[in-house]
Image 1 (cartoon, rainbow, N blue to C red):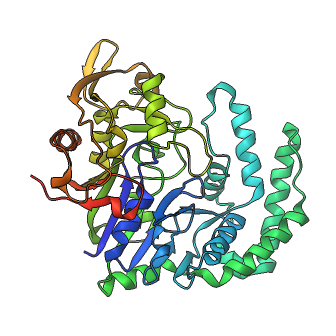
Image 2: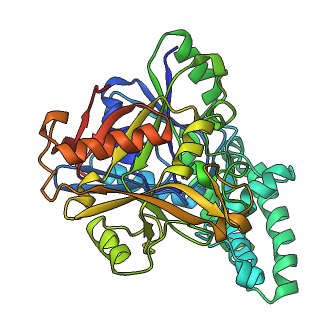
Length: 425
């Protein structure tokens, strides 16, 4: 069973990009299996900081194959720009593969995304307006254009014109600026020429690698609480972000899965709209934001910050089947005298340790906290478990037990060398 999966277990931004970069020391292939360029995975190598949106995080290791799987929606102009920027920084693109079954995002999807947010008014989702939702809607409506069509310019042009005209009809109804179809098509065809050599049948390639006993890591974007089925619906993304989504989004059988790595912050953050029981709308929340540099890698938006939510984390780890937990940003808590952990909710006067399906219930949920002492010292120089102060060790063991998983990795800073594996009871 050579396939592992790494997913987020909160509302995203847990540090998956960094953890995947660290784990790729021992793998042959990294596969993105869902989402689009609304995700931003940040990797820091030495003094350099890189942000990836569509390209898997194994791109910084020359021996690793990087697959953009069939479950993604791919912005053709965005992917071309991202690959060109990676190449300009000296990294090879020779091991990049784009699934011929991946759906494509165009300018009309982005405009439709913005229109949907405006029309939603007070019920807006808080999307990145990158066209993710409309592209997935086209996929389900069976009107989408796939990456295989990048290899056939005439067919691509005909499909693009037809879909762009349909969207222009919608835009006309709502007073949205019409798309200049031919001007936009010229950009698309330029991107198609650049991307066509990367297009391949990743499903066959991946399964052949499995048969050859290659080590494979499936990389999730966003996180469990943003899953279209299991997240805080409707304030979610448009794909299955949980570990089970890797099978459909990459085209692999479930019996090939070995471990599920879950990434979780030592506190909790969220971007966009939706309920957030442990959110801190005060100086403590501001302090977490500043210490953790909590600003979106894709949008730059400030993230909402709060205490660790074990109810949400336990639900996510259960649905994902996490058996190896990586806790990130422990160092952000270094200066605190005491640290709160949400162990249960009070919903309509009743205590519960279950994560509600209803956002209305979650919106009125009152966190029930337990408090642990802080450690009041710098953890950023720690390179092994024994280097951590006793109170930091106790905090890690406590939250790991609460979410029902096993601690496997601790991160105490953004760089590669600030992450270490642990083996504790």
